[in-house]
Image 1 (tube, one colour):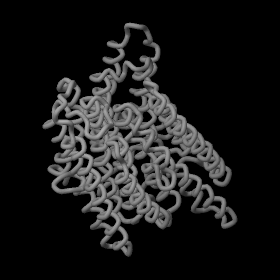
Image 2 (image 1 turned 120 degrees about the horizontal axis):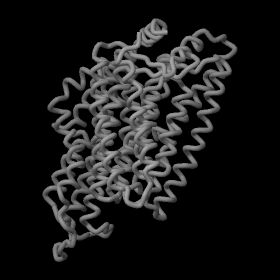
Image 3 (image 1 turned 60 degrees about the vertical axis):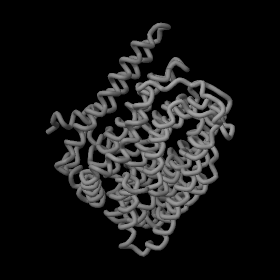
Image 4 (image 1 turned 45 degrees about the horizontal axis):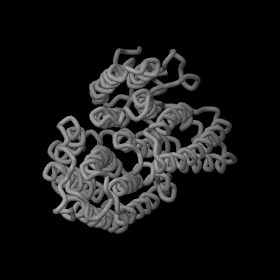
Length: 497
């Protein structure tokens, strides 16, 4: 029997969809204030709704919802478990400060459709985290990608348009490969519902094994492109470095969609063997991202490469193939998303107060203590130094690697990456706050609270996740155990049907 809790599963999709449609229809020259209020109200409701869904998952049961009462495998099925609830909450916690920053800095004035695009981006993200069907995962991917194409180009500019063009071409290629993979799997199994797909792949004849592996490889390429895995990350540094600050903060979630799809689909449909691919890919991505961070001369580009570092760290934890490794990856995912989003907003504040000058030395900032303090917190957390949240995630990852044969590789590359990150961040901080033109007074005005609190709120995750880390670790461990038992998911789905 469907309960109120089950009906709530569709609200994270319906709420931004309804808000986005309303904002599209509300396009008059003097409508910006009303648009801001509607967009803010819809976005502010998402953390409360996501927290409620997290509470619903504490009993450990998988929840399903079929819009239109069409059962699987014919209709769209939404599924809520601890993993999807965690990512819904994380999306909401990033979206609200990003939107507030856009309104505080008037970044939403640079184009007419910022607010509807922002809501459709949230709809695509939430839908991707909730769907239990491979084709509808493609649909929600396309929704969030189409919104991201326009958001990336929001405000115009030569570099932004160039980065957006590369981003669009590569992701359209990925979408085409995604459709080919879906068609291959459907032709072989006759199903795209994830649970049905798992059953039919397990029962497939040996003659189809090669094509099934080819479909899996195509999916890995598609999700690897979305997640920015080596060698498919070339689009990310320029796109993230040139997007407007609130858009870049929201984009911190885009790579996590690719990582989420890998976590959700491969263990369920292909078993533990996929980890043989992910661990070396994760370590190689981690190393390449660290070199990119060290080579970066601009703060925004450094943060963009740190996103690649985080993806490599996440795939390393997942590739260990253990509950402890997956739990460490999920804990690190929460930390890195919040800190990276906060740093993108902080980088814009610093650039604004420096007059967007790239010269060395540059004019000093108007609020050196505030901005330097926030940068110090973000840098320590990003590098994984105690006592902030990055340290927690990396310690859990190293502990998980200790029980596997990959221990020397994981320890050396993860610790070496942390050292390279630390060197790059110390050098960048010195350049931003110490190597300044003392004889030149800043012409920038101090930023009001409404401009700097979104960055501060996101960066506060560094100490807060460490102080209250035990509940998070307990939750991610429970989520990892739930994901490591695909048969329980199949049984619950069969009972639900």
